Length: 189
Image (cartoon, rainbow, N blue to C red; front, side):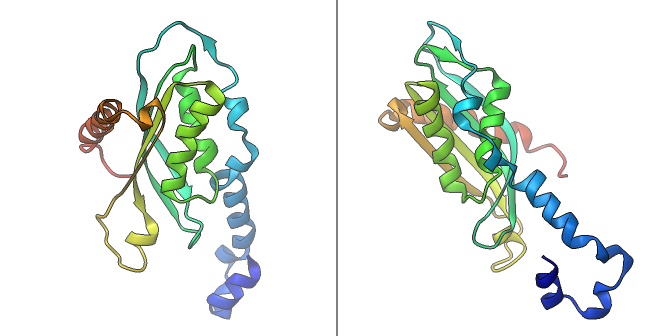
């Protein structure tokens, strides 16, 4: 990190007191906050499931997340909607948010992130069907390159029985879009 800064920041700025600890702070931020998902195991996260006979849709919308794009190492942030049809086991709603973070806190493009979450629910939880819908502000698009400040990227993935059912897909997409409409009045951070 120090070599990188030496290549892009003028030498007189590198000596300033507020810049001296920057390489260490950047490394810590990536290790502890942006890429800490590498230390998480989706099978372990979903391993604390409860046995239930239900087969009705379980969904959690409005999950705030952040991730890092592997192409430019710039963050993106947004909201996720995770839904699944249980196959005899369910997890708490907080577990669904942890599952999103497990995969989001890695170097991952948005499309792959959606697929990883949906597949993990089918593979590790035994869900009959699963979905992950992501709406995000991609810093690669908003602060560099095209600089489209209001652009938002949308990605979704369906797995198991939801992959083949347009009825389930439409239901999940309605839940996800309803949450975005309700959340649109909130102030930006």
